[in-house]
Length: 329
Image 1: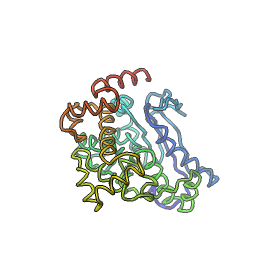
Image 2: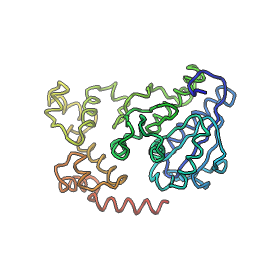
Image 3: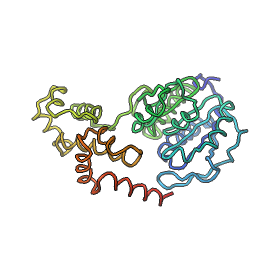
Image 4: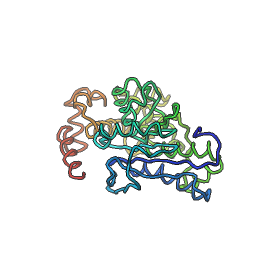
């Protein structure tokens, strides 16, 4: 059975949810299936929720998700979905991976949602395959798994395995599945339930900054922000930025102050510091490496700018973040 061939047959789905996953990513899978069932007035998607340790999965927002059944090596179905978020190696440990390996042949298709891609890669299922993950982790994912062809796409389907880049891309993938299997009309109706009118294909790149209406209201600023996002590690000067956009420096300055209430230089620094903060809190990279990745000439330069923005320099900020995270779980 091909998941994407037109059919009226329901799909049996096992959804494994790890702690520290995103509620938004979960909803973009679960609620889309619920919406399709409601509109079709039949159970097109028949799912069961499982958790790695058969206990409640505590999501990043603090909500607990109870499993519907005990995870064991006898479950089977059409689609096995693995949802993961922060600290996936902790929540999907080696014992669990061995258990999951026994499950793989019992499903026709396998999906990794957000950091679920990392779980599939750790299992060796993405070797020599195309895959994606959340844009924040694309570089580290590619470095960690050089045998995986890492794509910046919103979602990637390779053979019987697919991976998605996060919440909105998971919504896009589910709509693609509904459209391919149950028809475009149903997919449109499901999207309409959630007032979701953004049209994306799987090969659309994941944006560092979601520009939304700004792309329509002022495409020149949107283009500037895209250029900035592509050059965080080697920042363009404002003169170079204006030249690439075929704008005068004066007009570029005016557009940013008019629409974003800051200068292009200030906004560029804001983007780089946001990226630095994510690397400080979500990775184990050295502060020197973080400085290089975010375009600061030295660790001292990064520390000075970081402290001005966040009241702490990077190292103590990381320590405090880890202490607070430990209290939450």
